[in-house]
Length: 323
Image (tube, rainbow, N blue to C red; front, side, top):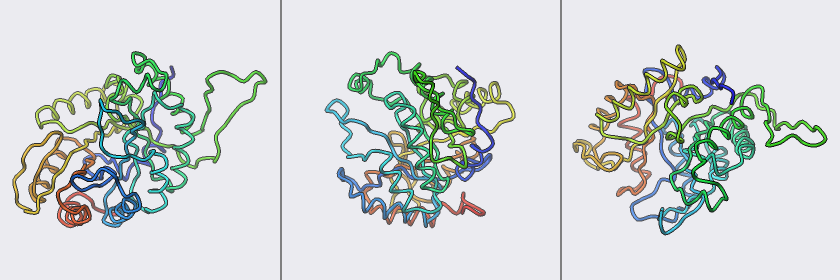
């Protein structure tokens, strides 16, 4: 397997999202109220447009191929590529991120074609987040060996990386008998950045070498500091002198009381807006470059939460041309 290092073009494409010593804030889609499991996706596009205008830096879209009683995700997720296409045409500034496409369960050339398509539709606002999924039984449903997912992840990453990089290069599963050489259209003007979401079964050294950054779930502050230290050490070993981002997905219940102190939740907090600013400032100081807020299951109207975050939280972190 070749050693893949992110190019300057890939870094610049994601600079609105990841900047050294800064923290940006995004939202996880869909944006739902408590008890809502059947999204109105026309309304979701309206909320995305609202978040874009409010100055959020990213909208994250999950990949949930199948549902089952053993993993009862109650939300009816759209295919991520269809949803990302809709978001690309309804937003103007916000970055769009797949969080994350299940790399071993999709053919890498299909992923590359879809990624380039979203990149074109969005005007270069796409970051391709890739993961290995957290539902082992899905591998059997797709005819894949779950025990081979780590190797599949690495193999598929290499093929996707070659196809969405500059210059784009198609690595076929096997060469055509007549020697036909394939390529992808439309010709892209910029490389698509590749982001590791979760570990994909890989070491942090592998992630630091191959991805523009690493996105993980929120942990308690002490555990998070340990994970960040491990990440920085891996970056120094494998990508010296090159910026590698660190991001966190955080569940949020935003209280109507702006001063309500934080209460720990699974993967996040219930808190008022003012303590949330302090929490995020601490995360920035600890080396976090992006936080994706998951406000699904909100007890308040989602539009109200978006507006309060935009007014009370974003100004503390978003400055300059992308504010």
